[in-house]
Amino acid sequence: MNPAPDDQTRRATAASEIEEPSSAQTPERAPPASQLRLLGWARKNLFGSLPNTILTLLAFWLLWEILPPLVRWGLVDAVFSPAGGAASCREATGACWALMGEKNRLMLFGVYPYDQHWRPALATALVIGLLATSAVRSLWGRWLIWAWAVCLAVVGILMWGGVLGLAYVETAQWGGLPLTLGLAILGIVLAFPLSILLALGRRSDLPAIRALSVGYIELVRGVPLVSVLFMASVMFPLFLPEGVSIDKLLRALVGITLFTAAYLAEAVRGGLQAIPRGQEEAADALGLTYWQKMRMVVLPQALRLVIPPIVNQFISCFKDTSLVTIVGLYDLLAATKAALADPDWRPFFVEGYIAAALVYWSFCFFMSRYSQWLERELAKGSRR
Amino acid sequence: MSDSPVVELIDVQKWYGAFHVLKDVSLSVAKGEKVVVCGPSGSGKSTMIRCINRLEEHQGGRIVVNGVELADDLKAIELIRRDVGMVFQSFNLFPHLTVLENLTLAPLWVKRVPKREAEAIAMQYLERVRIPEQAHKYPGQLSGGQQQRVAIARALCLKPSIMLFDEPTSALDPEMVKEVLDVMIELAGEGMTMICVTHEMGFARAVADKMVFMAEGRVVEVATPAQFFTNPKSERTRQFQGQIIGH
Ligand SMILES: Nc1ncnc2c1ncn2[C@@H]1O[C@H](COP(=O)(O)OP(=O)(O)OP(=O)(O)O)[C@@H](O)[C@H]1O
Ligand SMILES: [Mg+2]
Image (cartoon, rainbow over all chains, first blue to last red; front, side, top):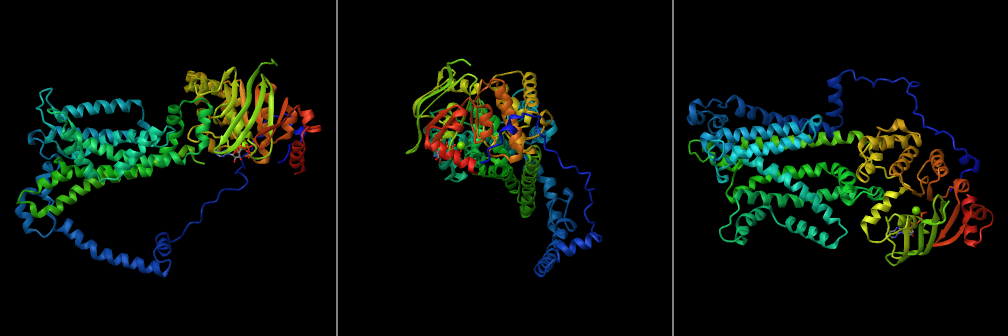
């Protein structure tokens, strides 16, 4: 410990700013350009060493074996036009994309009344449009909350009907993509705040709250979603008084929410634990209340750290909605399966499932890419 | 300087598990007084100073701040924390907020000051710690000395009447120590009540009204700087001084 010389500290002088090293002294130089771009790259990355070369050749051989037949099946020999019906597909050796022309509405909207399909279609388009809008950072703001509230109301009216001259459609008839999207989005949106409460509860100083959170999380994490859904749809009604029934869709939603929240809570807790104690102490010392401290100091940092596991859970939740089929709901996958029940088209189930898989994949891929972007975007300012 | 103490610790006791960290700690600080606390590592200096704004809970004795006794009353604790600023060894700035946002957070939410006004106050304190040009940067983009000055400004933004410093310069590179001490000396000159844990003896000589020496959880000696440096009463103090000056 160096005691500072007396007179030095007494002389309270102007601040001694740390000067940035000026970049003028060392002129900036461009990185060395590689002359043969492609060749240089290939030599370095593909044939850099013997194992590398072997792997590269192996990969090329596999591609050679797989790609051409795949292209032939999927594109060259495939039937695209639904005009010839299932018969033209049976004659062709390639894929039967005509199936999609014929069955797309059944696959997308399930058992929703056929002549009313424009309603779920419009609702889905609205939700996807608003999702895309919400993803743009420059559009973030309080208005989005209102936009979502309005959107939810409009979607509700479109799906249920019963007002404005729209025929009433009960939830048992909902199906396909709108059902999948609805369950996933609502499940995630409801589970997220719940998971934050659970994670905070698990770290609470109050033993009762801590025990409750830990008990809940461990209980739910210990059972598969299928059984949670079964409980929600078969067991739960047994506890209700006679005559009271809760919508099957709602029960499934509650099941998914409760299940997802338990997993999310663990991801959030990981973030909370990574925040140094000093952050909370500084917030305490400033007189912030517990909730202010959490909302403005701890959670913004903690959640940013755990975007990848959180989005992982979102993706899981999205795909897990396909399990609601076991309680008799027609989500996208179940609707696809139902559409393929037609004996004429049954041989082309592979194409049907590929299409459904593509829909799932595109949503999940979007979430995954978006989370990567979000992580970079949010890290921009506070980079060390 | 009025005589009624603004901070008073009376026979404060604290344990970490079975470990007795604070033993009969008594201390009284008058308005405007500057108290420098020193002592060997692990002697309980941080623990003592952190009890004053209830970052740590004491288990025996009494702590009275501005006439309010620290007890389990959450409202009282929040009021006291508003009026007691604290500066930490490791700055503890909020890395996800800009310097200006760090400074306005508490005024906006704790005191409900309008945004414009909070920002004006923040800029005023940034001027005082001589880094107004850094207002829109993030803490991670500043040097250690600049960060600590922001931390001091952040504490000042609530217009506290008492400031606590827990080794504010010991995480800094030597060349940055001075810029922080300069700010603290200036603050002392304005009549702020200050309790500083520090081993900067030059600073202590310059501003302290009272030196407190702690060892093994006890206050071993309380003296004026003149007495403390030239003629300490206890053998333990002499030993300690020999160590830190001997370096
Ligand atoms: N949370 C804790 N749990 C258990 N023991 C602790 C805790 N915090 C501090 N201690 C112990 O209490 C004693 C006093 O710690 P304190 O931080 O107050 O010392 P200090 O005088 O500030 O030392 P330093 O100069 O190293 O900062 C030390 O022996 C330390 O190990
Ligand atoms: Mg300490």
